[in-house]
Length: 365
Image (cartoon, rainbow, N blue to C red; front, side):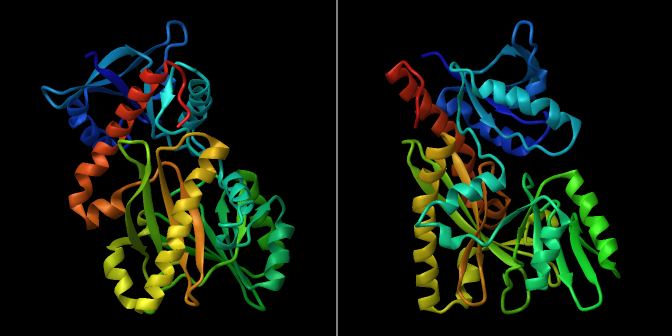
């Protein structure tokens, strides 16, 4: 039987090297050849790609030229750099090709995702009040009613670019992260603060949300990360829940901003049995309704990382939904999950291939 080819795509050929290599090491078991490439390496004249093929004998990546693979696992993370700007339109072009099947077509920006969830009666109560910001006046207006807020880049990930704002009677203070380091800047006048807001909003679009009290009993910020993936039968399943815990004085729990992963079981020991039951009942509602809602609106997805805030009063919040989630939270706390985490893209690719052969047409699952 002829092997199928799965292309793993990223903005830099070395991005997620460890993750892609672990997937490729298991590919022969599924009858799959693995290649990896950068979208901008596609030659527009003959549609060949200069990338790397995984050699299962030597267990290494080898430079080679190949045609566009029929299955693609998209792990492109975009920011403001030139590589992102080159790659993004090429990926959009690939997604429109009926001969190419993406494991998942990804999600749009945070505002579009928020707007869709807001329409759903089962889920909208879990959303923090969110506003799309276009002028500094919107931020100032919010701070007149609430002395703090959070600004999130509409296309951000991993906590990058998130800013907390605090207002006292005399001054405004902004707080943000540069890697794990928390930095602050204070403005003595509204004019200086306005100028800073204008410069910020020229760089990219932001969302404004309340600064929720998402800290544990010891003052550490935390959130719950739920990883959902489709299994070998194409059905959504919950892989694991984990908790990301930031450091005291921070307002973020992302691992790239200095957070540490702990197991959900370890963290939930501080809850009463009733609190744990209510939380897990709410999480079940979210995980059962969110994937079909997003797929119906945005097309096929393979995996989702859902970030949940659990406030001091027991309220539960959907903080973020990521269609290209990381796995560090789970690999560091539960190494026994490695085999299933690295095999999942291959098993789902095999499922899509079988389904496509049966239908002989473009699949919609």
